Length: 98
Image (tube, rainbow, N blue to C red; front, side):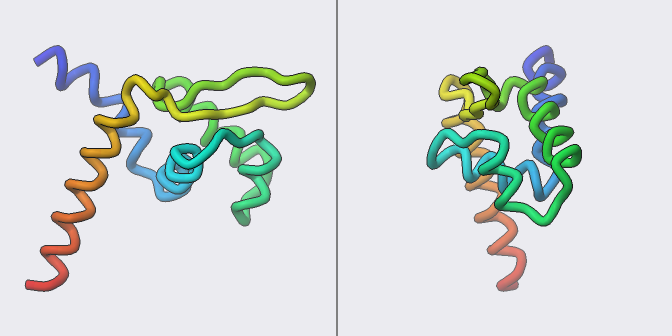
């Protein structure tokens, strides 16, 4: 049951389309905050909020390079999250075809 309880913060963070899109981008390459911000039609404070949620959940790592924050997926937990997301996507596709 502790596993379920510890998964709740990650699952809550994943329940947002913007954060899911950010994670998908970061799964392909590291990006700085400006690069992430340019990919969305959101204000910088909104993207900062999403990034804080992702970092606080442990899904994303952040490091400073000069005046920029550089983000990357947490490679320790990303494979499991990716399997979960794939299973959910496949399940949703199946429901659409019935």
